[in-house]
Length: 350
Image (cartoon, rainbow, N blue to C red; front, side):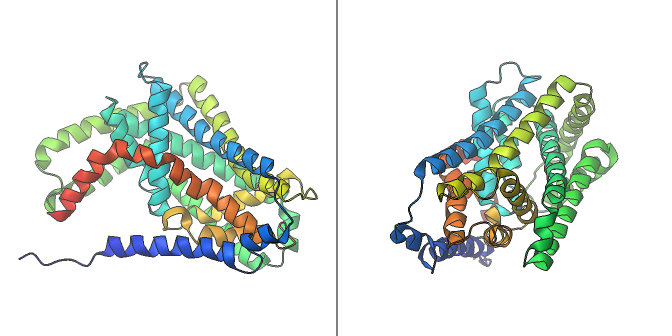
């Protein structure tokens, strides 16, 4: 008889689901929640909500376009539809895993099933993520400069400062790790080999000796691809520009929600930079979708913007568009990685 282990993953998933349901109920049913707003007769200009949804879709399809450019640079038969599958698969698994850690592994698995070499796929996705981190850090710095006066006059200045410092430190640490891993063959090889041996000892990876040569080959491909990317500005520059567009589209979602309430006093720059702060501080929270932390950051940064009992309603609409709606739209693409998840379940049951 095998001794059953404590179902940690199940308990964690139940906790996250209950947390999300609780947050949605709070923002809908509590005082000055969305229900009160709808019943008050104030109304919502739904055309602006549609624009907010379109802005979120621009974010998602820009993500697809960047993946398409990176992979097609070598694999000319890689279609935009394939990029869409990879992109939406990554968006789904990023949304449902802690700190978005599940997105890239599933994208690599899917790319490999499309006959894209693992080393190349890993390298390109790592480069894409590095561009993402650098652009996010740059936009965050600009946001602090543009919104410095708002930060100083905010009633929650101490809390906001702590969130921003935490966000900056986290983002810089992640970027530094990616750079070292991407451009130091010794560090990445030691790192990969260490975990391969650990997985071999616990029988997740079988025939380790035969795998090592393949790992070495993929690492060589990985590093050679990383070195070559900077020799191709025609690929890198469009990726940077598109990533800027991607962030701008995402950061403007709260502004369109703001307009949907009939408010026009505050411009798009202040709202977009406030959204950049929310993303910065919530990105490293180890809960799927940074549930709880994202809403807390939103209320802290937007408390002085969404006035007249609209803060909770705006937070719920924002969350539905940029998180729950993304999960709903990309969930069908999770089927593309069904074989991988089934294999993981079998291994965990051994």
